Length: 162
Ligand SMILES: CC(C)(COP(=O)(O)OP(=O)(O)OC[C@H]1O[C@@H](n2cnc3c(N)ncnc32)[C@H](O)[C@@H]1OP(=O)(O)O)[C@@H](O)C(=O)NCCC(=O)NCCS
Image (cartoon, rainbow, N blue to C red; front, side, top):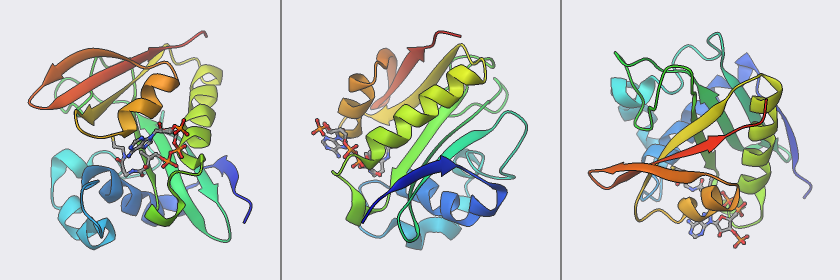
C-alpha cells in the first residue's frame, strides 16, 4: 500500500499522542496501551499536549490510515524535553506503527520534517535517543550528531541551512 506524507493537523492529536507513547515506550510491544500513563507524566505529555502550539510543526505518514508521525516542539529551560539544547532549537519526536517499520517510513518522515524545519527558518533540530535504540542509526544517516549523553540518553543535534 502506498504511503503519503502530509502536514500534521490539529485533528491528528489522538494519533500523535499514540505515537508519543510509541516513542517513549519503544521497548514495549503494545505502547498504545500506555497513552493514559503518558498523559499523567508531565515529562512525556509536554511533547504533545495542546498540539498544535505556536511553533509546532509535524508530518504524518498515511496509508489507509495514519501509520507514523514526526514533529518538533520548542521547549524552555524551565520545562525542558529530554533532548533540550536551548530554547531556539526545537526537539523532534517520531514514531511509526510497528507493522510499518523497516520500510522507509521513518526516514521519509524525518526527511520531510527536516525540510519543513528549514522552510520555517529553524536553525537546528535536537532529539534524545536511548543508547540502545537502533533509531540512532536513522538519525545519524540524516546528519544528526551526538552532542551530549547522560543516564543512557544521547542528545543529538542537526544544524540546518536557513
Ligand atoms: C525509529 C522509527 C521511527 C524508525 O522508523 P522506520 O520506519 O522503522 O525506519 P526506516 O525503515 O525508515 O529505517 C531507516 C533506517 O533507520 C535504521 N533504523 C531505524 N530503526 C531501527 C532499529 N530499531 N534498529 C536498527 N536500525 C534502525 C536503519 O538503519 C534504517 O536504515 P536502512 O534502511 O539503511 O537499514 C521506528 O522504528 C519506531 O517507531 N520505533 C519505535 C519508537 C522509537 O523508538 N522512536 C524513537 C525514539 S528516540
